[in-house]
Length: 401
Image (tube, rainbow, N blue to C red):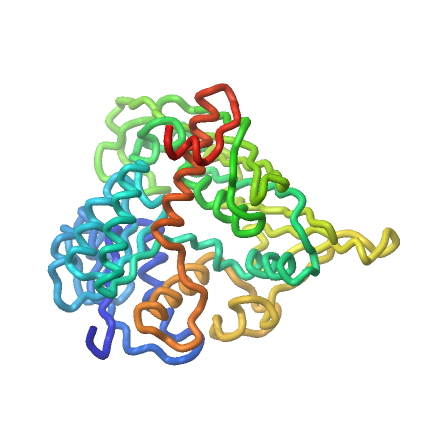
């Protein structure tokens, strides 16, 4: 690598734009100062979208074929933010071309592809390349703060966890068919937002050992077909024809974490009207409880048994410089300033650049491709549980079945 870092983003949709902004802003966060980051290319098969995004976010050019980015000598680091079915081909091609790769979750659309990507990442690591998967919510200061309170004994051992991720991007029957509505049961809401929910719960309670009670429903069974390119959340002309929705609008399951003594319930939806991005996680521990809500991302709720019944109950703890990621991680890192999901992508990008450059005192590394496979194994176990009427499935059984 030269004395600067060239970055590109493949996929110019909503999450792609978060990556574009993150690479631009990450060098200004934390210390030490990174080598200069060059914003080189935005790749998307829909050329107008790629061109607009490159101009908007200050990238030098745009491409309509990921292979052009793989072949470019001025690009070192690439975010892959496209449909899950495309991940393996693009990631393997980029790694073969010598790029460092940050891939969005879930790692792939099948365990077979995901495990092959781990092999490619291991081979690339031997050549000095970095390949990571984006588990963005690990960067939420509130979630990281709760983890600290568990680990330092303030909250102590987790007893059980309750988590849900409600979204409403599919709540209207007028939302046109897209790749998100295609695929086997478990590739819908579960893979989309349930993948986030699973690793967040594991971050706080330990690895999932088994699941049971898996259940899927598809509330809206047909979607209109768009007449042209359809961007999420934008009205588009329709053909008048409809396509069958193939996967889940809603999913729920129970899980055992760690040594099996910690339990929890998890629920996801893409048809939860008026919850555009409603991730909530609550952990109940031997010394108290804590709660974080994405819709109130700049605070956590904290209750401690030591307060006693007279003063006990949830208190509001406003996140500030004494909590993870805030000090040095915001342009104005003072208490009460406020914080949101876009910063998670910035911290994720900064952690990736720290690893690529070998920075001193780096942020915690992003999740490995092996972590990405484990995340998919949990989702696969949920799908197997649902197919078996809610039966218990261990992660080992899900892997080898």
